[in-house]
Amino acid sequence: MRQSVIAAFMLLSPAAVAAQTPPPAADAPPPRWERKAELSLVQTGGNTDTQTLGLGASVIFRPGRWTTEARTAFVRSETSDIETAKSFIADLREAYALSRRVELFGRYGYLADPFAGIDHRSTIDGGIGYKLLLGPVHTLRADAGLGYTTESRSVGDDVSFALANFGGAYKWQISTAADLTNSAILTASLEDGDAWRFANAFALTAALSRVFSLKLSHDLKYNNAPVVGFEKADRLTSVAVVAKF
Image 1: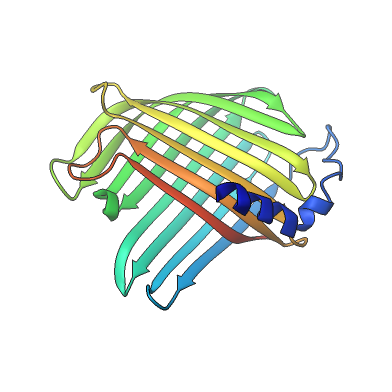
Image 2 (image 1 turned 90 degrees about the vertical axis):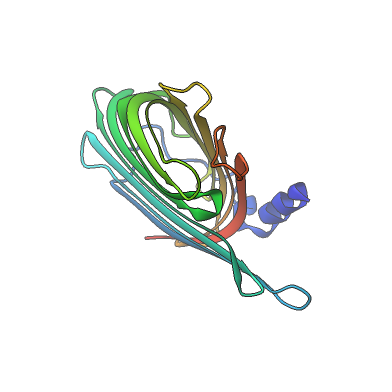
């Protein structure tokens, strides 16, 4: 089923026709601004009434050596007028380039996911990033940092601990009309070896026009020490319309 969805996604997209379009020149600098907003909506009726709404936005700003990356995402689902899922995510990453490959960064993340037993979670960390691939076809960054997290839970005791983060971000510029991205982060508690988390976000985006694109994504959130009574893993697969401005 998943393979069929991906195949249909590629066949219906103009990016399949433009796949041979060469990517930007190697010496072309990245744009100063990158701004995106996305919307996904799924609704069924008849024997089962369901509705899922997804909203998201991201901004990248590059004034000289500094790079600001901000992202937010909201998802809500209901079945027969009963709310069955709701989550909100916000991230902010500020980096300063020491060289073409090395950068220092500070990052803040927020999560509210009541259907995973998390009323709200705040995480702050800072560290160093290294760019293994500089593009323009393939870009890859790895980073590591230290920080602290606090988590308010709907069941049981709240959780707070010092942490170490290890992450990476990859982008494949397939053509000027299509790209594939994947980002991952492993969070390890410095106080409890069992309290570790992993998150991965995969996305395939294909242009429909200069402004609008179609995005197929799969997000995984894994918590090895979840709230009592809740599952360790949450997955979200979606297709969204993305606007660039």
